Length: 447
Image 1: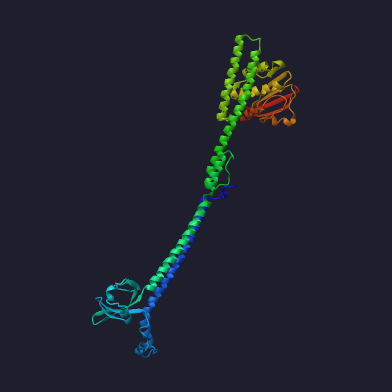
Image 2: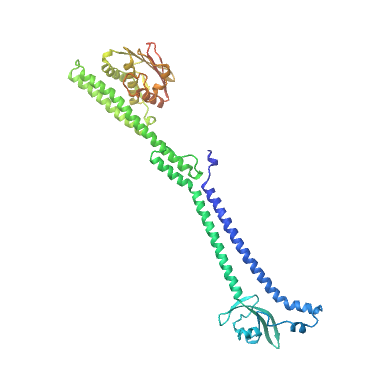
């Protein structure tokens, strides 16, 4: 999947945050709208009450109410829950309505604010709540009088309490819904992290080799780094395993040569000790070489130009002792001062495995030739053995594959040679030899 189409953690958080904000905002908008409607209605009612004298005056002037006093007398003043009081500028109560007298409200004006331009909640001495409104304000004989209308606040306080309960209920409900959405958002938003932890546990238990590739963009660098680290660790383990296999394979040849030297009665003690020390030295070099390969890999070994003839001479002497019963002869054709652009240990390992393989399968002859051109070296190692079947000519360079199942071996030698040659950008293949056996052809670039 392309990295441009990977889900982003920030997108997850953004989407869920916007959803939560939209939900809470919608809920608060509904509550505010309800409160605003109630406030607007209260404001409208108060303005309507304030305009009542003006309406009555207009009706009287229009002749619709011909006798205001008679019209007023026709009304029942006791059929109301409104209380009226008249206060002077010194907060003295100069008159109270019948309802006020019935409710034993006296000296009401001392509890009233100076200016009641809007309906206002006040509390009397008996802790009874009233809604007061200044209906009119007049000046007569130098004294300011104001007519104040009051009404019991019981219904208002009850309605307000109900409003508070409903508001608390709905807000609580909205908060619970928002929290539920938030929990779901966190569960969804951080699901990749839980998946990452689970897959890391699987990697630790060797149940998987790498992490999936379909993580959000913010985790891509982390997962790629973990996969890279896992690959490096896996390669390191493979190098160690291969190095140990290669070391065992190489030491086996040297140990066989040592045993052959010990069984050779023609060698005096001094020469025997010298030959055995030579094999021990080569085994020590092999151990150091394989450990270095395991640590840094084949590509990390330093190249150098190594003279070929001394190495071939040493290997010929060793292999002639191991396969003394064959009386095999190695013929080599190259300049005595020829140098190959390989690490010395790589050169020893490469030709040691190739020649050991040829000595093992030959009848009596092994031939080594090197042709140098301007760009590369062509190395040909031939024998007069049974050769390699065409269907096995590619497979034999893989670990564990052997061309001849009847002969003992682990199928490691040729795969080691292939790895060494590949690390130097070379190629190896097998063909039929003029000696009627196998011909291994190696091409190595000079640079």
